Image 1 (cartoon, rainbow, N blue to C red):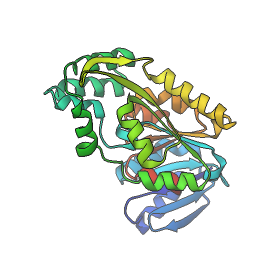
Image 2 (image 1 turned 90 degrees about the vertical axis):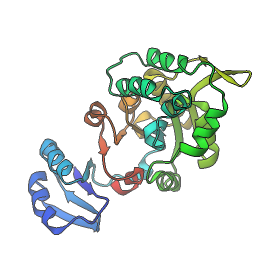
Image 3 (image 1 turned 60 degrees about the vertical axis):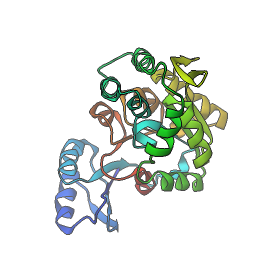
Image 4 (image 1 turned 30 degrees about the vertical axis):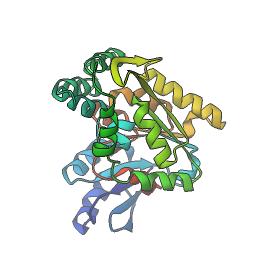
Length: 279
């Protein structure tokens, strides 16, 4: 396997020798100022590489020689804290003075401490009962920001022939706007019930939990006529693990420890466009 090292800042000369030694690589190729390829690296050295890279704010990935982004046909993304920088439900809750309470449930759920995502979401949405639906628009307009490198990553994926899927345990109010704004191909998320301009505290239809995310990835691959092994899945929380396990390449983006440990690749420092720079 080749080991690709990435950084937000130029990788200085003093890193080259220790990285090559830790990776047990036979050759170091400086791809550009912020990226190295260590040829024939030993994947069994991953724990040592992980420690070194974490200490020096470097991201790393073991990539098969000759692999190309165009080998894949789909990139599937979580929304909250992956494609975008916020957790939408926490920001909605801020408009009724309950951000701290809702955010605590969100955090516990994403860390995997609350095992039942459906129950977690139902509890959080119930706290929003009676909130004016205009709060959703305010969150979108005032607080929702794309994660670093998001647009560049999507442009590069499309140029390589990949379709895009946004699959979220969040809400269609946001996924559909992002679909139109970014030209995404497919979305799946939860629908908040709104009656007389106010949130009822309920979700309509099937809740998009970990199982539904994984099924959505499989079904989208089937539509495209590809195997899930040709999909890339990107996420940050425990609700993404099953979807990521289905994919041929999984990317943990600024993720919880349980997700970083399970993923093929973890981006702790670089942006989402780090995906393009793996190949």
